[in-house]
Image (cartoon, rainbow, N blue to C red; front, top):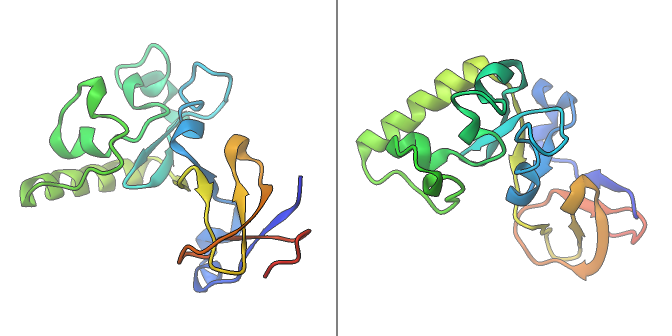
Amino acid sequence: IHQAQVCPSKFLSTPRILRAMLRLTLEQLKKYDDEHGESQILFSIRGKIYDATSGREMYGVDGGYHMFAGHDVTKVLGTMDLSLDARNDLQYKPADEEEEETLSDWEKRLGAKYPVVGELVPMFNWLPEGYICLDMTGGVAVCTGVPCSAPTPSWWCQSCERT
């Protein structure tokens, strides 16, 4: 396992980034549902991961909002569709102004109550050309040795000396 470091960016100057932010795939997020051994209860909206652990009575196994735990609930909140099929639709975009307003209202309400602790990422963290792709499965950065060509810098592999 190679050690990964965060690349410098304009975002590192903001005080909120002082604590390490989680970067989870949807599959990794599913472990934070209060059923699979993780102590935190997490859900995501528009790619932002919220920590609802303080609301365990609502989001935990016996809670009324347990269906949110460990899932992306963007479509659930935007459409007010409480079916299990509405979860984890990462392609969902509000269909109209009403859905956008509904989703924004939920983001504000839940964001005021629960901290954002990270972001959803694709199965692999892809880096700009010249960087090495790191597999973040399991929450540990593992160097794949595969050069990357995506536009968003996030991580680099120290052992491969790619910067």
